[in-house]
Amino acid sequence: MGRKKFHGDPARFDVLAEYVHGCFGTGIQYIADVAGGQGMLSRVLRKQYNYDSEVIDPRGWTMKGVPNREAEYVSAMADYYDLVIGLHADEATRPVAESALIRPALILPCCNFWSDEKLGRNELVEAIEAFYRKHQVSYERVTFGFKGPKNIGIVSCPTNESAERFKANNFETVNNE
Image (cartoon, rainbow, N blue to C red; front, side):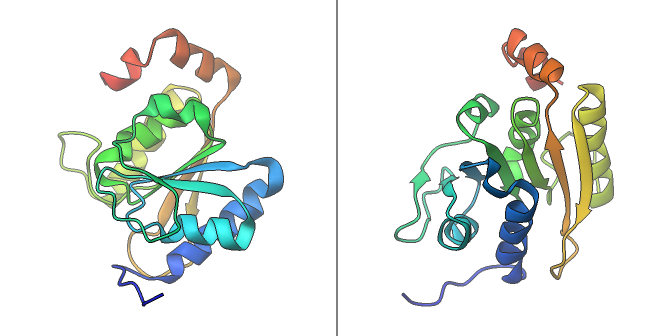
């Protein structure tokens, strides 16, 4: 296989995969790698940790051998997965964050596709955290050990109450915020 060119610190894939394994261990199996581009994170999760990870990305750019769904991610897909990851998910930032109402989610936001307001990285992270507090989703802010300014993530786990409310509202309340 030829070398793939990635933007940003290539160590981020190993760092995140190691974190996922350390945090969730064998308690999870199916992972959504939302807007995962070429699929390097899924590849590491599969080969090094034996997770069933697939890329969900409308661009369909994945490397050979990396399972993928050429589709736009919507939060209703979260039901199928044990963990939803959005590593710089761009337009899928909101659906990945909303997934935390149903399943554990790990999101590292980069660009503001959260609101019409101009938000810097810190304000974007704070806005997502405010969303979680509003919906009673437990979360933790994590600074990951790779280079670059976009290494702050939010790891969340839904409460039973927030998941039930989310399902009862057919995703409308959350999607219209």
